[in-house]
Amino acid sequence: MDAYQAAALRMHTVGQRALIAQRIRELYQRALATQTGDKNAALSSLREMLGQLAQGRARAVELRALYEQAWLTESRPYWLGNLLAQFDDDIATWQHRSEELRVHTVRMRNGAPLPSLEQIGLAP
Image 1 (cartoon, one colour):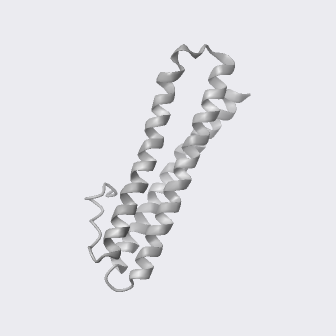
Image 2 (spheres, rainbow, N blue to C red; image 1 turned 135 degrees about the horizontal axis):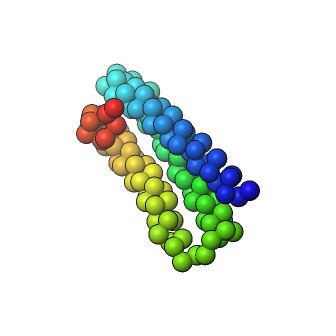
Image 3 (cartoon, one colour; image 1 turned 45 degrees about the horizontal axis):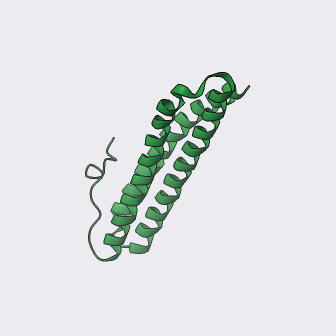
């Protein structure tokens, strides 16, 4: 049953990632549009983005643990490290995006404009 639960969560996570990516793009567009007029609205959008990124990271951590548990139930651990490295890379990407966004938030508070969608890798 663990393997089925891990597979179902993984499929759900794929869908959630797409929704989070779309929401983050929308929030960043709102932040770009309001950064010169209503700085508080822009900061609110950036904070909400950080929440979305934290949610994605938490889901990746949960999926990693469930996958590891399912693997050890059915398989030998010798190859598990190689598989978990993929999850670790995903978790690191969520963390890196959060840290990058925090830097842009601080810069914006200090008067610097936000980079474009293309510059931060959010362009469709």
